[in-house]
Length: 109
Image (tube, rainbow, N blue to C red):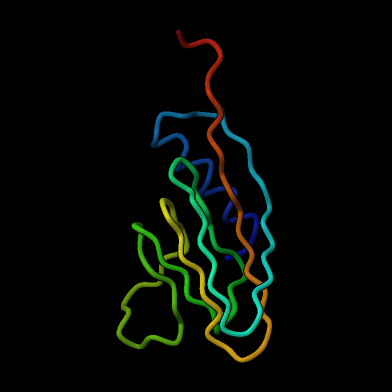
């Protein structure tokens, strides 16, 4: 998935969630060493995986992305909640996300 598609998906997801345009977008570029595992707390955020590497595992309550697992019928690019990221390779890899962060609406009481 490219950045443009991720931003369009972010816009639609925020509308579906009733947030509208009250959100910010961050570009996250993580670098994981061989075999490294990382956890991200994204309870109120969306993380949209872009340009994924073949050797990456990303899992959350929204689903799993792992191109190396032939048992997965659908690869999930949109993640939320506690997100587990693991480098399955013996070399350093990049993991890129668009992070969507809802901001509190100042007009609501």
